[in-house]
Length: 188
Image (cartoon, rainbow, N blue to C red):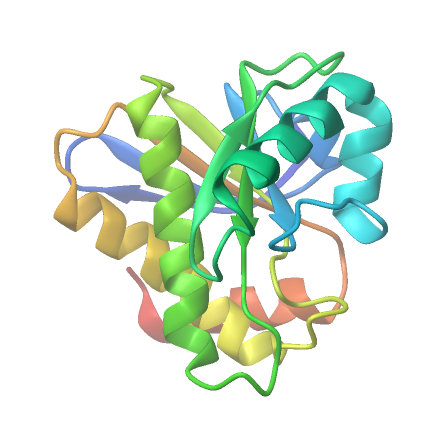
C-alpha cells in the first residue's frame, strides 16, 4: 500500500522527497523513522505502535543501546532491527520538546541524523512520521519548516548518500496542512 501522494518534489542528484498520507507501517521503503525519546521507551504515540508491531526484539535492542551508551541525546538517531516489520531497520530519532529552545534546528538535526544513519546502512528509501509534533508539542509550522529543511539540506550536504527517496508519512490534519503550506511557500 503506497498511500495517497500529496506532493512529490524532485531534488538534485536524482532524489525525491514525497509527502504522503499513509500508515507508516505499510510504507514501501527500506526503513522507517520512529519519533523516539532519549530512553528509547516506546510508551505512546507512533513509538508504541511501531514497538507493538515489531515485537520484543526492537525494545531489547533499544534497551541495550541505552544500557551501553546512555540516553540518546536530542538531535541524534540510532538504528535497531525492525523485528516483525517488513523493513531493514527502524531509525529512532530524538526530536526536541517544545520549550527546550532552538526547537527548529534541533528537529532538523534529529532528522538529518536519521537520514545519515540510513545512509550508513546503504539503504535507499526512508519514511518518517510527524516528529516532535505530538506529545512533544512543537508547533506545526516549526515542524513543517524543519522537515523540509532537513531533507533539502541533507541532500545538499550529502550528495553521495545512498538515500534517494525520503517520504514524510503523515495523517490528515493540521500537521499535514502546515507541511503543504510550507511546501507551497518554499517551493523546493
